[in-house]
Image (tube, rainbow, N blue to C red):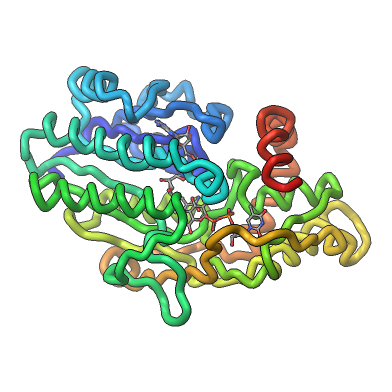
Length: 349
Ligand code: NAD
Ligand code: DAU
């Protein structure tokens, strides 16, 4: 890349996007950062209230499927790079109804690619950086996912993300669009919408509600603190090689049941409850359809080539996460008192 002036970040009001925006606007005051977000149920401008007045930050409410809006943004704002995070991100919702996953993750991504291709006229000093997931590789029995593991998506969510990855590569291959993809493992941390395992359990432990564990709780995920993902995105954006893929993970595999037990222990201490009191809330429920057994990432490429590695241990990251949710009760209450209640009842009752 020659010079970076204006970066379009999509999905910046969501969980990971808000951490990426905060890192970029604070660390790079000379960049203009435009956050394009539709503000779906998962988007929340409260996630960005501390940086919303910074002079190098602009928020635009809009849909990545809206071609006219994206064309206007590219021509009026002279966008030279894109960090694309906007997506429908929750596996359970994709099982209930994949329609929005197809619209946003596949059509929306292809729309952004098409506008970027036209606006950038085949020039190489631009970058389309697509943020993706390890779920595109399917379920692991042994070993780790590497950048050359064949795609084998199993859920409607991962099928839509795999499709978007294929479109990014197709645009690079066919039109020479300068692009990078990274595939990351499970994130956790502040601002995560409480439909996902960790914040859902934090909220339920706080309110002494059942902790729904799918199946036997033996599914394994590789957990990474969200700020470590944001720092990996920063490193890849600035130092990554165009047309490459990078896997990002925490080398931190846990069975779901063990994660929930650690959360119970941390929260019993913080809430001054009896030892193992919250564990009694654990309730085994019907398994997720097509539930992938194990994900785990080999991140040696980004470590060896770009010098990135995770900096926050799981124990510290979980404590920080619990502290954040306990301190930000209004953030959580606003969410769980609205539409979320309907979603929760239909998902779990
Ligand atoms: P999220 O659901 O918290 O946030 C998604 C954001 O995208 C929201 O702000 C939402 O309003 C916005 N959005 C949705 N549809 C849109 C549309 N059509 N137009 C514009 N904006 C739209 O998701 P997240 O967990 O922050 O994930 C961000 C990205 O990272 C996604 O692409 C996801 O696939 C990927 N990812 C997530 C994880 C994880 O563990 N959460 C891990 C690896 C990769
Ligand atoms: O691996 C990266 C992916 O991680 C991202 O691409 C997705 O956007 C993100 O949502 C996440 O997907 P998961 O399905 O792994 O995350 P979730 O928090 O929904 O579930 C984590 C594990 O916990 C999974 O094995 C299912 C299980 N689970 C989840 C919920 C919500 C339960 O046992 N009970 C629950 O109530």
